[in-house]
Image (tube, rainbow, N blue to C red; front, side, top):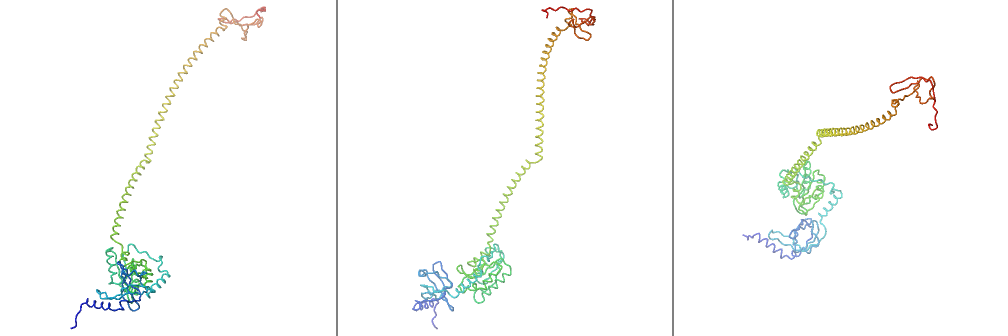
Length: 428
């Protein structure tokens, strides 16, 4: 029976064979970069491929000082290094020491050409982007039914919001017929009237993701009436679907977080908003009650009945005041009249006394001048028949009848003789 060897022995033997081969120790390989990843440690992991085959490659951080450009998908490069066996996994790969750029690969050229054509058509324009609903209730997913993408989406959706319904269209996401399967999934879920769609898959090389670079997939996403979130590959992977979609997510997990709102956070925000609204309403009600009380006091203050009562009381007070003023004025006038009457009475009394005294004086003068007084001394007052006074003998003629008025009566006499008296110069 031939000898039996362990896996470690076989891998070690093969590794030793590779190490003894001079051609494999100093070799340059030309190919297109695919599935390029920059590790946090500084190492670069990538795949070199051509139309028929591929080989895994790695450039360690210590060798990167000879790299003068950023290694990206689709670049045509020449990698110099050694092909060795990784003993633990039993696979061989290229350990690159130096990398130079040759040009672009065929797939990357096709990618750029289609991207430029669709961009010129305006399919990437922001005005065609639909807004992702904030509170989606039904989310469609177009991806492989057994991949890690759908598991991540389901886990995150269940954790964020168990009430959201997920609708999976199991599509091919790699290989022949993948593009047509993705298009059918988009169209089928679009007819269901869902809130948002997630179209994507997990990471891979540019060949693995190529279905999402096909024009039919881009047009299906563009013509979809439901907002579409693309979630293809890892964060560094970019496809045509990312440009056409309404929103790009770096990973399927991130797409689930964008499409499914966090119910716990939503509930906390709702409770906080409810508490804030309640507090605001209570404060508002308190202010309204305060204003209502103030307005009630103002209404009472400006009550017409109160105003009428106040005016009636004021009129009553004015009436009393007016009556009091009238009484005081009457009393004042009465006192003034009494004083005036007293003064007038005194003045009249004084005037009467003066007039009486004057009259007595005048009466005495009149009595002294009265003919009767003179007649009382033996004299008579002589008048003719016409009561004209006779004070001269020249006024009487013989035969005239004269009246002689004495103290105690009148005598009618006839003139029998008239004897004028001679008047001396002294009497004149």
